[in-house]
Length: 337
Image: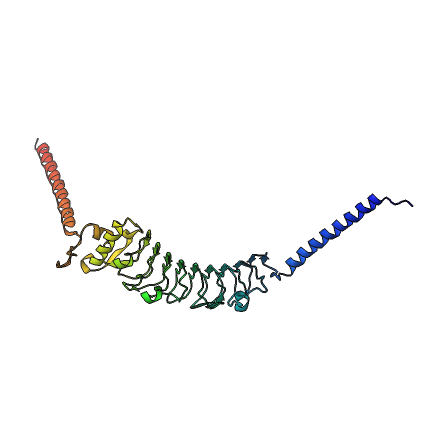
């Protein structure tokens, strides 16, 4: 039988290409399968996505190439520290809406963002796998049970801590955060903020401590902060004194974006209780705020208005009476005819 060498060569080349392509595909499948991705999660080389899938435990194993862990909206209460500490390319961790009460994490220096809102966290302890300072840039600890600002890396630029149980803010808590640019701690039951609490966060840009229970604000909070562009200090009541006048003048003078102060009322002194803060300051109801001048509170005039209303009512009544008398006289005249 005569063999066609050209056809034979072509057949072998085609067979080789088919086997090679099959081997390559099988290799990819095996690599993907060897990841050990949780049955309800989605995984690839850089992302592990297990959002809202009912997890009670931390999913393992995880590829060391992963950069993003999305574990939000589950029932996880602990993290496998050994696994996380080995993820040297990890940059983002999201464990929002879980059941953590303590946040004990040993993180690789690569992590930039940590979001842990909507848990029951009372204590935070963050350390580095290398012993060197962490380089975290953004931390969200909102909607937890924290009673103070935890010890955090000085690298943090954005700190979200709304809806916690922080009664006091002081300089000791905030002084390490020298690179802080955005600070939000709204609705956290804060009653006292020391006058020097924000002295060291000179790079701040957005400052939101609104919807708390403090009654005193200080000009020092905003001075020497050249990058400050937005201020939110809306509380329920403020002490209407010379310090408040100074703060108001300073903020207006810098043309900063300030939230709706008109809804804040005076807590003290007695003559001004309940009056809108902005009206009191703009109408100069607080005077004598310069050195060697006694501070004077001018009560918002109400008596004159009330007196004017009474006089007006009496005048109308008199006019009506006169009209009735005049009509009755005319009637008498017609009856006599």
